[in-house]
Length: 268
Image 1 (cartoon, one colour):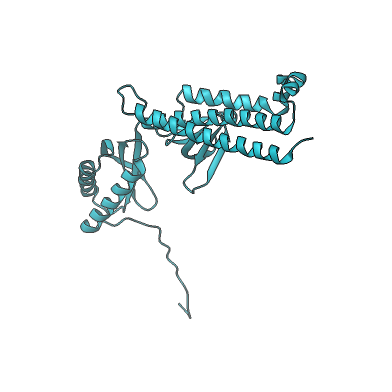
Image 2 (cartoon, rainbow, N blue to C red):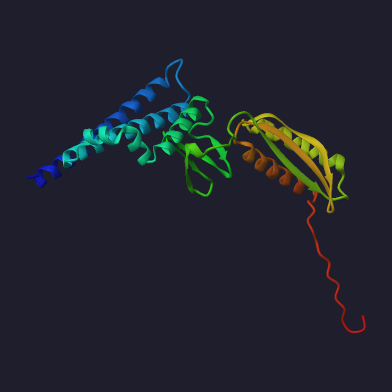
């Protein structure tokens, strides 16, 4: 007759051992990747974080599988007979291994093809955000609103990586039709020179491209610059801030839509 107290104790011991083993393995992985960052041929920080997360994910699955099989054996299930009798292939399909294997293979291709790494800003289909984790089976993506998207690797068909290569900053400035364009261009050149000196994120430019459009309310001029990845928005905001300050000093007004309402009263 089964001693239930003994069985429960053994299950608890196995669970505790699993937790301790995982903790030790995670510490060893962290120590290894931290040490190799300081070597001449070590991975960069993002690559190290990605490989570390993937290796932890693989080992976590291995420990869980071994632990669950041990618990089933402790409870009284003949796991060896079960595996032999049912066949590994049948059990795998029964647990949805086809999808699992697809996710795992896709995860390895993502890693070895270096499609993206932890910390990079990417777009997967219609979801954009910072890569939080690249696991054995899933990729975690956090968008700017703070939502965490968990995406099976096997379902990833199209990826746009916004963190590789330089980015383009583009700022359109509109002035009224009565503005002195030569004076405006001169002010914009001074702003570009000031931003270029102050912002280390700029790789090339900024430069005034000229008149981009003649609209309903005024003349639109364009400034462009090449920046380090994911810094273009900061550069654009700084350009706009300095343009506004300089326009106020020179009394150059930025046009905006207005509406004139004519009302009739009495005989008028």
